[in-house]
Image 1 (cartoon, helix red, strand yellow):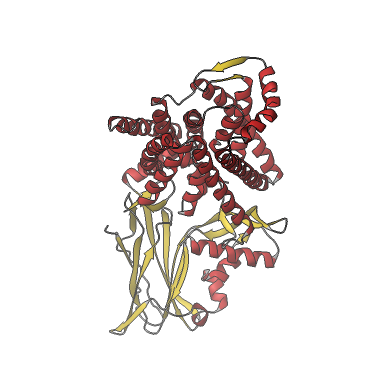
Image 2 (tube, each protein chain N blue to C red):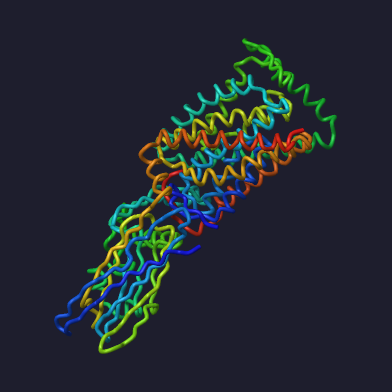
Amino acid sequence: MYLYLPVALTSINILIPVGLGLLVGLLSGLFGVGGGFLMTPLLIMFGIPSTVAAATDSNQIVAASTSGTYAHWRVGNVDFKMGLYLLVGGFAGGLVGVEFIKMLRAMGNADFVIKITYVLMLGIVGAYMFIESLSSMRKKEVKEAEVQKESKVRTFLKSLPLQTHFEKSGVTHSILVPIFLGCMVGILAAIMGVGGGFLMVPIMFYILRMPMHVIVGTSLFQILFTCIEVTFLQSYTNHTVDFVLAVLLLVGSTIGAQVGAIFGRKLKGEQLKILLAVIVLAVTVKIVFELTLSPSLLLSQAGGH
Amino acid sequence: MILPILVVSLLLLCAGMASAQLTATANHDHITVDFFYHGSTISVRGISDPGTDLIIKIASEDGKQALRKKGKVGGFLWMNVGELEVEHVPKVYFLHSTRNIEDILSRDEMNRYVIGYPALEKYAKMNTTDEAEKDRWFSEFVKFKESSNVYGTSSGKISLVNKDGEQDYYILTEWPYQAAPGKYTVTVYAVKGKKVIETATSNVLVEQVGMVKSFASMAKNNAATYGIIAILAALTAGFGVGLVFRKNGGAH
């Protein structure tokens, strides 16, 4: 059955957005990512204009992350305190990133920077998570050697002022650490035009040392607020949110997020990380192919990224 | 799903060979776009002088279009390398003819009536002065439009029947859902001796109706309210599904 989308100005088989929502919602509930890096290109592939795809995706992530945060909160896996500090940094970083992109666009090389940042970030994060998870699944001894290396970073983090204990995550950090990291992710997310979940999850694990299950819930909580802001701005300034498409997507994604949260609790942290790493690497390979293979069309609709 | 069928009837009434009187009548000229709209069909029919060839052009108004150009950066990376601006071109352009246009119409006449892609290119203004570049990017422009289903040409699909000293013509053509709401002009050219001897026109209005219209207009005119409603609906749906799963024992 087809439905006409009033803002995208196109008609779509309703099974496509519902199915895509289910798939991305599942990933969202499993790994604590918004899934924008997957959903937006998929929507464009199915004929949705790029500007509408990106804006509408943030609208449906509001629903999926609400559903996911709620599911994780019920089992005590959301660190609201950490989430709020990350959020403060994320908002500031987002503003800086948007200005940076404006500057690049004026200089005429924004697209190059966006694409290279995308490939590098996805590639580095995916490869690091994959190798690290694989080795820690194989032999636990490696961890002992790493502890020595990490102690320098830890000493530095401990020396920072405004130390506070994050009860839910069981870690102590200066509040400057999550604010700074949130800001860095915010800058990169604004440059790439994504929510930044796939960057935030590894940072929470490797730098903030949070337990994997709390990371997923906390990341979703943070993504929820980021996407509320983005949805409003996209509706208000660009008029590119397609409410009908968002509803179709969220029908699938809210259910997917719940199912993902249930599955996530049955998987170990290492298994979750390695699965996310494989997905991130697959997306990286796809982008590398897009960048190097001759496209069938040399023109595309203006707008979006 | 029943698709609305639009019938545009154009009557070419010819009083005589030299002073043929041309009138155009549209039976249904209003395509309504509701939630279940998935494109439509347009049928154009009418009468012309026996022995004349026909060209039917369905097009939107001319305007300016901006598209992103892809090109190689550093010799091997395909990226967006700038914007292509094309002026004086329609967003939708369909051309149907009884025979190959090049065989029935002279190049001058094609240019004069903007019939065919070469004429469209001649008429278009682009943000490049180099002729070879203009050729290359205009052919990419047509390729892009055809892949979006908003440009197309066909020959030999118009059926002709000679009856009582007149020629009845008829074509049934698909109307793509990708064509945006707006006003479109159907122009029928009667062609003889490589020249256009008569033209008849009619309008087709594609319009959003009901909830589709309300959503589209709210997104544009009440953007803040629209954004807040979209966010609240998403929050409610997220919580709602969460509660359903809780009741069904989805949690631990």
